[in-house]
Length: 352
Ligand code: FES
Image (cartoon, rainbow, N blue to C red; front, side, top):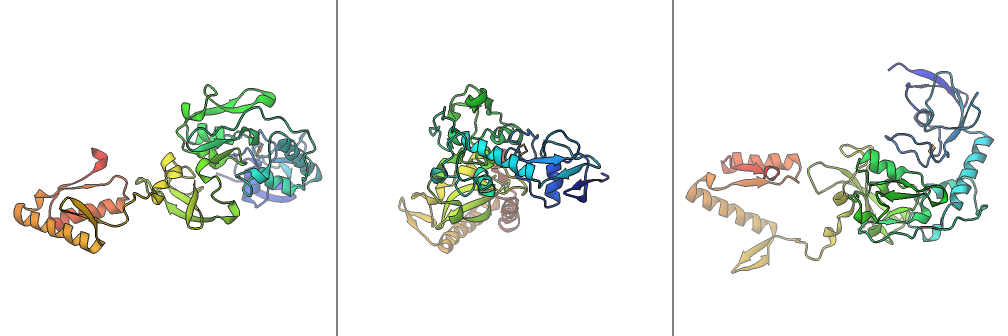
């Protein structure tokens, strides 16, 4: 598509028609803070923290929801802009219970970052009372309505990214909240607990239950890995502290999941630490299992295979490959059966 140009803080920059002012700024390394903006979804322009000045416009405009147009003159760094962003931050801080000391998101919170950036040290507006108790009954997600800034990112993630449509914004004014269909608890709603809402929450309103107390953001080392559950190969970050997983998040912009995870990939990692987990092969002798080395176990399997082939031929053996393994492993499995064992009795459990 042909490029157009606009003026960004006095510099002429190119953009592709259809881009927002925010996208043009990001492409050119110009920082504009955001709260409600969620990449890849419809811009709602609800928080207004991304305001910029556009020459000729009557008011400041939200850069995330304003399309860039040719010849536009945009300023992102004026006194008026910073005063407005500071005021918005002060209003948001007063809109609930934002106590960083007891917040799980301390150190990983955009509202905290904005307060720091604008030098906010106290609440200048009276704090709104908390209408809704914190919801902790479901197994995976803590919903702290007192910390919610109603940016709507969780709603967009649920409705537009995952397309599960389990939550929406409900009620009005100071009673507004993120609700399920009948404003009941998450576990009784259409929620599938993929945790995408937690992933995109910019503050501490939605947090992973299992991550509570497991480590502060600055104590965490992130390790990139591939989800072990199915053959899709979703990319995830393991947030590690002292060798243990504190939580799991998706790798943004990485294929194939592009920042999404399912309930298993995000929350079901407890098996790693299970006392019942098999850590060594077991060989059954006289009705009881005993631990064995991999060499011993594999030798035993190979010997049994050879005995069966000798007695009844290779077609007496069949293999079923696991749908959760990667393509390369399934390929190796069929190669083993066809080329080594000598049978075409090989299938895949996805067909069963
Ligand atoms: Fe633009 Fe919220 S980030 S209005």
